[in-house]
Length: 109
Image (cartoon, rainbow, N blue to C red; front, side, top):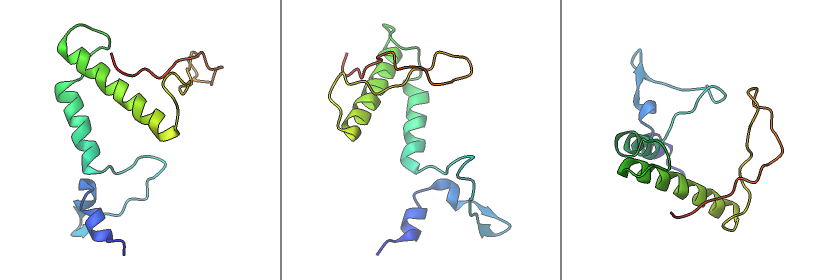
């Protein structure tokens, strides 16, 4: 059986109380309460890897690795091969989808 209490404990925002009661969030279109692992990953990125891409300094190399790993994870999830076209590029200021320009999954260095 699914242990809702155990799952809820993994989402720090759901531990907040309001007027003595735990909060319930119905804001799916406007935001999402995130799992503690997401908070840890974002904190790690901002403290150890936040940098411009493709630089020669350590934080840039780390940042590129995060991007490469995320692209590979997306490719794995979708069953795509290295180099398959997965990303839609938006070139217009109003963000209307444009034909895919062939941005490719990059893995490794």
